[in-house]
Image: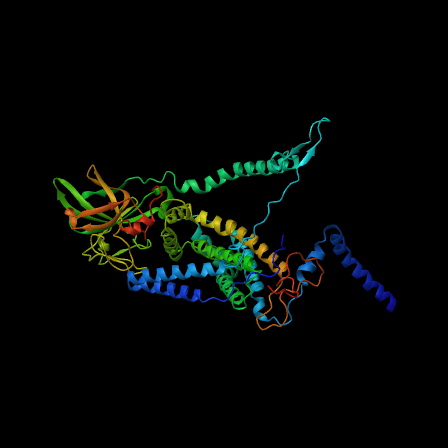
Length: 308
Length: 261
């Protein structure tokens, strides 16, 4: 057998990386300019990457692995009774050595003990984030607090035990009666870009502020939609994205009416809303984190949502 | 008189050397320390080669000030902000230690990038030091994670909303993103457990990983030697003053005449 090469494997000079880099640049420019150019760039990059890798692997051990003869363990001649021929033990029939057994059992037992100790600790770290996540319905007060056709800024503690850290904000608009049932639009203030708090684009009537328990209600005078102070996302009065980086419409809260009081429930995501007010058609999806499209091919990137 | 003075000096030397010898005889640690400190380096290295030690120093400052801050900081939503105010305004020299930790964080990150730039421009990432580059990248990622988790702890408006944005950025990673985000929050929303979770990650989990990675990083520096600058005529990593058998093939680690391929 040849001794291993005594010099480092240094790949020869190659022009393929240049083509690869050009492909990547074209792809990135294409992402901004047009899908066609992006596709072209991706093809270029892939082609040159293939050529480059082929170049690198040619002439190295990856491509020219020498045929190494498998090492032979000399069969042991076991003497038997005189007159018979000696039995030859082939390597596969070699006895399983004690030292090998002890080595493997030490490693195996160590692994089992390590696993038994680690598994509950890891579970303790990870599981509570995903179990028992549900939200309780929260009372926002009597329906008479919500004038028709106007947004009211409502804040409440989703879990009063936790205090201010659990305070949520919803924009609530009473849309009047639809076939005998009151209709509400309850929009979450979490921007669909990266979760900053969107603000109503219009003045509030601070003098009309009401405080009932942990709920505060401030009516707006007239608003032209919602805007996010962090990165400039803009939404119309139904929560549809009108400009900026958000990938979908604003999330909404489910609501229910009990004993003449409005209750907000769990939040859900909305791809877009057709129409407005009581007759709007809301395209509803399971709640997703901000920045994740819920419709279109990009939503395939988020096939499973953790339990909310 | 002169002889008496000399004996006094000798006695003193003996008294100082005795415990050192005692430790060396039983552990070999002093020899190890000498081996670590008195290594040969190429003669024409310059100040750029000190960026790694500077980064290490910045990390040690962060570790020390962080441990002391942990004595006064309270990681829960009701007390976090006021405990930071207490550290800054009431505790003796609290403003200084908190300031060192706050600004030292940026120094640490900046030095890491400068160190990485030096290694890149000097070609010090090449064979046989690729593994040390990989360890360095892991250290950089850990350092940035320290910055992210530490930013929430003051629990003011900037901290809260920057962390919301940071968590949701993690959430947009394909497939696993939503799970990473929910793991970081410890639930569907940032709640009263999130700050303690970030505190534990910031001061126990990642620092442990960083210390382990730095140990490996330094081990490889000692094993492979310091790289010569590109303009050097000396061979890189000419080993230690202390003689040691080196195994492995001849190359950059063990300079010698190379065979023609």
